[in-house]
Image (cartoon, rainbow, N blue to C red; front, side, top):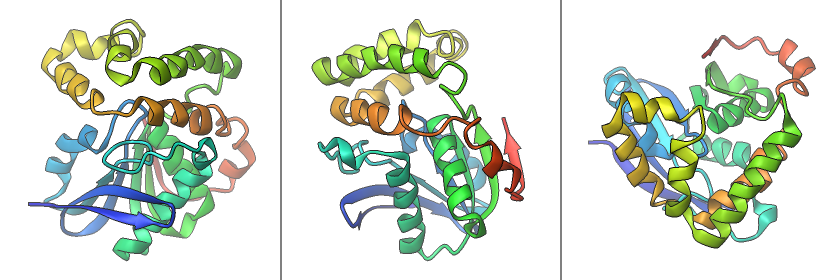
Length: 220
């Protein structure tokens, strides 16, 4: 049985789960996900690693600040650093999917000595057409603010091309995904879009910093 807890990190409380033993492996969830997104990976890796998953700020049961200034890539990186400090993990293997991959990458750039290796999956959304990405997701943010998370789920995950394959190939997993998304905070998601996703640097803007990064990386 893994450990489930909340820890106060200055201005927010972060919910996390820790399973297994061995070298730390940290997995950071995507925008539509949570620590539940990694349940299968936790089962696979916990016999060999101490697997840490957590809910980012804005994702219950972690705190959901209502002040927009409390959401940014810098806040996400700081939350991860303070969580590692709390658990006394000097360094870890750090992976992330989509938004979580962006957080993992930014963390590695800010704290390279604390990262043994990177796993980056689907990282860099919005880098090619930043204006179009913001325009499309601003509409989603407005709906999340006015309607909450559950009503937005079906449009977001049955019509967007990147989401359709999960529904087609794994309907049961899609249902589990939908049930987890229903626990999201519409305000937290909207503020995460506006403060983190819209303002984080594109992968192209990180070009010079990436050239100096010598950490082993698996890029999916």
